[in-house]
Length: 134
Length: 280
Ligand SMILES: Nc1ncnc2c1ncn2[C@@H]1O[C@H](COP(=O)(O)OP(=O)(O)OP(=O)(O)O)[C@@H](O)[C@H]1O
Ligand SMILES: [Mg+2]
Image (cartoon, rainbow over all chains, first blue to last red; front, top):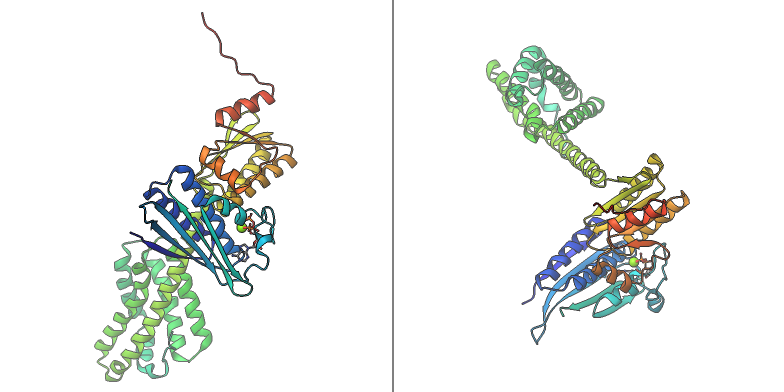
């Protein structure tokens, strides 16, 4: 079983909606409260990066069931913004091209089990993260 | 919107001009029927008189000034109704009943040419009706946005815990707008009450991300600059773990498990000690 939601992100109101949606899905598959909170926070960070840096985009949220029956949530954050020219720098704790804490990207990576970043300058950014139920 | 066809409505204009008073009476009667006394007849008649004369003016001379004045007056009226909680129907009825008024006039006068013009006139009125809907919808949206903002402010109470100590309990999902409102309210209350200590309690907050953390830290720094000390309380285990994983450091900001602990801490800093009296 897998159901998919795709939502547009263009403003902070959308981010609130995404947080709620992720919270509901994570609760449905009985993720622990700690993991739910981590997943919701990662969603919040990556969605906000789309709004702040990516000029808007989409979030795809998928409920997963692995071959061994374990469950999880996969989220794909895509935008067609400027892309990230130096991925290592962007993933460095405390580095921000703006006024941020520079923790959203590296922090989200630590909050999930799988983290994949695809980006091309001038073409956009796609970040795929997965978190499994323990 | 299509441009009202005025050239071809000379007979209707003629009819309406010569029987203006009768038309106005009938229009007021028809439009007033749906309004269930929400405006007085005199008020309504006054509004409709203005609309009627502007309608005539804009139909008579293909006059852009009269037309835009008509639209402005109509928009103004629709906006006013929207703010007074009229329904869309109650708002638009004032315009649409003009069709019936004219139709009756034509029937009375038994004027064939005017009948032929009625389709164009009807379309003209429809356009005006659509304009009222547009303005109505836009105004309602504004009303709702204003209410949301008020709610935002209402839902962020800053409470006084003790002489010189205030607290703000944060509940629910924090977006940037809301966090900002809360933080401004807190700083303002510090000034207004001359308090030197504050507790920000986040027991009711489901997630703290970098944005919320940044708002919290900025507020605490601002409070410090004002000579006040802020303590965070109610960081629940799942939030604490998430904050650590994110890498957020609250530096030397004091944090206590519960609001009660925070109050006790601040009281003792203010030289107040809580002692349980042993009785007997
Ligand atoms: N979707 C994106 N498109 C383009 N650049 C991005 C995107 N996401 C992140 N970046 C770049 O990576 C940098 C680091 O991102 P990160 O989320 O860690 O920090 P931040 O957004 O600046 O601050 P915060 O700690 O508030 O999230 C950003 O400053 C930005 O330059
Ligand atoms: Mg960020």
